[in-house]
Length: 267
Ligand SMILES: [Zn+2]
Image 1: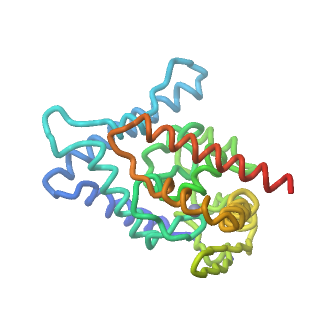
Image 2: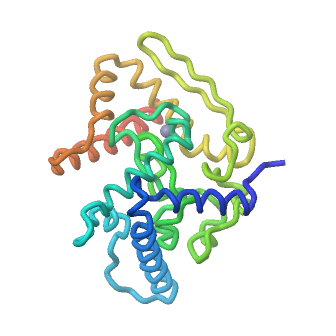
């Protein structure tokens, strides 16, 4: 029997988040209003898509990132994001939600990820239960995939799917990791190797789609000490004011991830 949180537990979690969505209590109400307005925008985009109305869409998550209130300097996308990131990190015990490796303490290495990708399920862009933090490797591998036979249902449903409906897709907010995946991690002075085993349908799918690739990449990188040092430096890079460099690093990480995979499958 797979355990999932009750409705009451989910409601309590959401209420707790909304009550602390800004680090300063004085700005909580304004932040809640802003989040509500963004959720309404996301819903409007979803309904337009469903009705086949095509207009150029704005990436609402990016809009949140660049938001800054003209009247309140304490209300900005950056503050909302940082508060959310802190909460998620703590809930996840400072580990990636998929591979359970420790999250590095810099921006590129811990990305806020949408379990149901925002590109396909725009209606869930701001749903707390759809947001997790994962490492750069898992994020690159996951991208816009849903990996479920229910993909079309998830895309077309306005309400967030209930925990019980994730019966072939591992959901980091709804499932108990230990019930679905078993792993061992070997660490020596110079090497880190993780081996994963899926225990359920959801766990096996997660292994097949993300975790097995990650183990292979670790083996490859660990076998190349010079490469490992530089890759670690790049993965720990904190995005700064140089957006061109940040973009270059992101593109390099994605290309390296693809190249590693191609190489491993050729062996
Ligand atoms: Zn990970």
